[in-house]
Length: 338
Ligand code: NAD
Ligand code: LMR
Image (cartoon, rainbow, N blue to C red; front, top):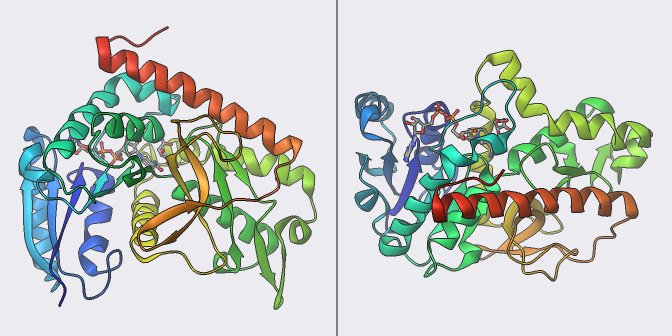
């Protein structure tokens, strides 16, 4: 058996946390023979609820678990961490944009970044789920300067799964028959779900998504809007933000990071831009298609970008520049710029 790894889930008493922790200790993320020490971090007033979550986890009798550590103490939580799923943050309510959460949430990621810098392993892999996810990940990384920037990411996998599900329904295939969907940009209503490079297996034949869908107008308009606003549609229907699907996407994101992507396939992750890929400014946490090997992601290069895509990709980059500036203003002097 390998040595146990320490995995931290923040917001573990919340609704995504509840849907997430079972999969982590079941072996679905880090491997079926990988023992895990699971840290469940939440705030002090939630310790009673968290105790209940741990009671249930114990009652599940997961054999891979070495220890459960429920805590509100950042230092205890992040000490020697191998992987962090940073979920804990306020969710938006009906009528809000995700960036409306910035002032309330960004300081959480500053504080956690500072502690990760101090006590986590330098190889720690971090996925930020709490919104606005891209900008929170950027801030977390900024305040953890001793950890490589490549070790931070934000979740756009849920958007990718939503896009694949829409295409599968439209074409009448299983979601497993759709590959290489791309989400560019921010996990927000400016994201650009791009199917130009995606493929579908239709009646045993592999073809491009535009060829299978046969409706460019739908792909360029309604489809993009559905994916961009799916989070809001779930909130409207459930009166709560998505949790089961967000938990599944978080596990898929971390599993691919840990285990790698299949040959010829890529996945979408918000990662740090170096300014040299697809014309996206340096230093933004921007969602790109990535290929992963040996726990290291690499942006898939060489995909053709037409004028339509260019415009959409730039709109999302522009929003991320604004969010970054707002977040830095909040972190530096507590004020969000108007
Ligand atoms: P929730 O309110 O049910 O749970 C959030 C939990 O975080 C609560 O238990 C809260 O006490 C805890 N928390 C708050 N501050 C914390 C801190 N400093 N440290 C640790 N824990 C803390 O919310 P939820 O539905 O689980 O959503 C969590 C976040 O995930 C929200 O910001 C939501 O918008 C976001 N989200 C992102 C995606 C995505 O695709 N990126 C998808 C769904 C939800
Ligand atoms: C989602 O996409 O479901 C989450 O980001 C929650 C939200 O606010 O939309």
